[in-house]
Amino acid sequence: MSDTPVRPGRPSARRLPKLPPAVRGLPSVSALRLSPPSDTWFKPALSVVVASAVPHLTLLALGRLDLVIYTMAGSLCALYGHGLPYVRRARAVAGVVLGMAAGLAVSLVTASLTGSTAVLIAVGALLAAVQKVLCDAARIGPPGHVIFTFVSSAALFAPQRLGQIPGHLALTLGAGAFAWLVTLAPALVRREGPERRAVARALEAAAVCAADPGPRHRNAAAAAVHAAWQCLLASGRPTPVRRSLERLVVQAEAAFVAPSPGVGAVEPERLRAWAALTRGRGPVPAPPPAPGTADELYGIDAERAARRAREGRRALLLGLGPGSPLLPVAVRTLIGCALAGYLCAALGVGRPYWAIVTAASLYQANLTLSWNRTLQRTLGNLLGVLVFAVVLPVSRTGPLALVCCCLFFGFAAEALITRNYWLGSVAVTPMALLVLEFGGTHPAGELIGDRVLDTVLGAAAGFLAATLVTNRRATGRVERALDATDRARAAAERAGADPAAAPTERDRARRALTASLVELREAGDTAAGEWWQRALPEQRLLAAERAGHRTLAATAQRRGPMAHAPSIGAE
Image (cartoon, rainbow, N blue to C red; front, side, top):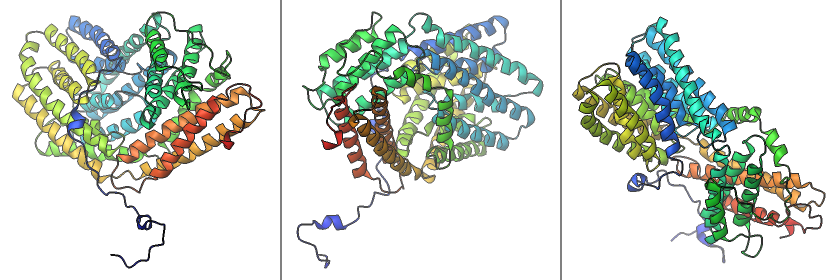
């Protein structure tokens, strides 16, 4: 018993500071469970097959399959941008192609100037760290930085001469241009396809929230609605279909913020029916107007016009600025990739680039997710090596068989990876090993042994670096997100309570509050999975989320020109 006196009516537990656990438990079985496939899994799978097949078959006809590694760098760009509206996708995939060519150029120049394994590993680790932080800051992906690192690391250990580099980069840019066309080709058939899918997801999430209200479903609905607005805002000029989609998002928003079924709510069954029609190829459903909304949806056109490339550059600079939580992850990537590469080189692996790629692939938003990826990557690669051993005799029956095997595993990887990363890795591993066969046959035992060693050492070294390099800035991100949410909530309350506020201002404030709540939840989830950091302001975070959603619910009843609406702050 403590001799410290306790005041009546005040539990003694409140007098004791609650210390965060230094080490949190890490999941194991849950990291390997399969999820339902993504609703768009076939899009990147088909795109990468088409984007790869044409260059592969062209090189096959020319008898130059040894150049596949350079065209493949451009073809893999077809994996990106499938969740973006086509206007934004065109810019994003073009940036991916240029970024891929830039990383490849650095690798090829380095490989042509030095044969030192130590230098090559150092450059590979540095490239992996830069690619990781740039992809995270730009929020490009999936698949994010891993494809960039795979291409640049493999090129570092390929024989190269300075005079060959311009031609090899031309092959990459040519294949990348074709991949760009492949990713944009669906716009000829269904111009608003990405927007329709984003709005359908918002309607489905709102239906789940309306049927079973709770913090988890409410946060998921807020994220889906925010993603739908962002997709529509980035979709280019308005069309009749996009106008209908905007009205559907308003209905989804009203459904998940409605405080009770009788106030502005929409039945879950109707939301699901709208979602099914929106996903289909028929006309977009035309919902009844939400209370207080007008045809122009209060300034969404002006907000769309304000979202230009300068805002994307500003977001990128903020993500890379001083105090960014991305910088510790970049340091983890640099140290982990370098350590993995040097360990494999010390054990006699001639081309330890796979260890660098393995380590680079582990780094996710926090340590818990990185642990999950470590398990998934290790299991998937080891099983993939077994698949490679079975397929290798078939691939060596002829050049066409080798090309077909690579295309098959490229499709399988994208088809399976949305179920779980380890399942996709089972297909990625044989594809990556078969690429080496384009340059000439290698002893099967050597390929398999090196890949197993690279995988184990890369995973071990990569996760060791993740545990040693702490990310204490994750809590700082939560605190900044809390402050931003408080400001957004205050602005929304002022706009909703001011009779003179323009409808444009009210809706923009609502969207800003929704965005801040999504960022707050993301920051909280990221920080909760980190080790060795300051205690999270969990009570403040929960209170800010509740207050933000209450404000959204209150302003939902005051949409449009309601000059005599009661004060929000009075509720």
